Image (tube, rainbow, N blue to C red; front, side):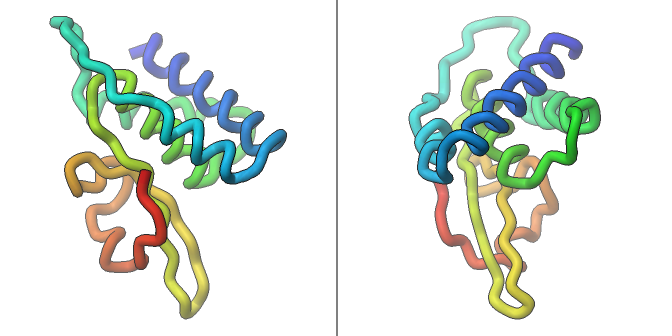
Length: 125
């Protein structure tokens, strides 16, 4: 689990700098260009293990991690470990709120399962 937490923490750090130096488009492009790799190993992790590692990395991170950074990093982590994950960004109008989460096969994996009922999906990659 420690290597996964370290990998997750490094992804958070990388995306922190992308968000600071670039624009949203740069973050979006980074997630979009990360392919889902095929994993042929007896050590293949479950989605739950990978999301748990990201949760631990968020706790250990030196500042509060917002949902966009966390979800982008989780999407990349899942794709690197063989899952076809999508970063989903949604919003609701009254009161205005936006949120980001990760889905695999239409199922929310890093948040509450009813996110699509609360937020109107604006973008998915």
